[in-house]
Image (cartoon, rainbow, N blue to C red):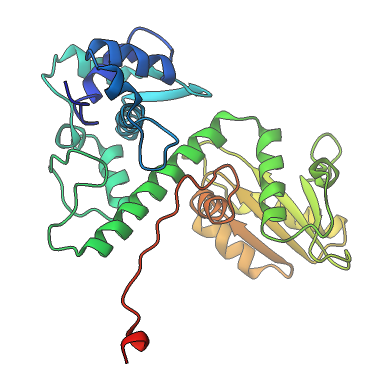
Amino acid sequence: MSIPDFQTLMLPVLRIAATGEVKISDVVENLADEFALSAEDRSHLLPSGKQTTFANRVHWAKSYLGKAGLVELTKRAHFLITEQGRQVLAASPERLDIKYLNRFPSFQQFREGEGDSENGDTASSPAADMLTTLTPDEAMRKAHRQLEAALADELMQRIRSGTPAFFESLVVRLLVGMGYGGSVADISKALVGGTGDGGVDGVIDQDPLGLDRIYVQAKRYADGNTVGASAIRDFFGSLDRFKATKGLFVTASTFSSSARDTAGQLSKRIVLIDGDQLTRLMIRHGIGCRIEETLYLKKVDEEFFE
């Protein structure tokens, strides 16, 4: 039989997740057996040559179930069904697909974040649910936005499943990746978080000579736990104790409007980076992710034909 599309795999993936915490690679093997895939189908690779087509589709099925809140990541490469997922199975649906998942607010929010204005479509692949009026290059760019939206969501899940110490290290690695840190080779030397840190988690040089420094506060915070104005004022006090003139406050959640207003009114320059901006910067600078495949869009060189 042919390789099933990712929407066909959603319900089987959810059923396996209901058996307990599962590893995604094991799910791929189990479903390959369940669908009686041939050796050729099992080994068929994506154009990048780095992943099989079937494994890719299982990953997408799991990812979309996660966007709808039906499964959740537990640790690296493992996931588990949620209570909401169990309720869905209890209703004995014949099939799960994008149209079905659109009934869940979290999935609707994810689709809006992708820039997709159509609801209820039944696309057969993550990049196929596009407006038919799009030109091929527009469709490719939209697919790229969808992939980055999914990647950003995956990065945030990994961040929130890590430790506070890992988050502090991640922020410093990002700053180094952005060109700060001067000649810092050992990330640990820039980390100062812990008992007696004075309210600062990291100190990093702004320039190669170390003539100026950036003081960093990294608060992981769970989704919905908004950073308020009081946290900004506390950080301002910490900067004062270090005689610092500028600081960077990074969180995996969001800042309240009063927190942003407070940061703008204080006498020291404090830059705020929330979870959305953090994942965008990570993707842009290759922190926690890597290039899987490069596509080139080419057009006619008009000067050549002049």
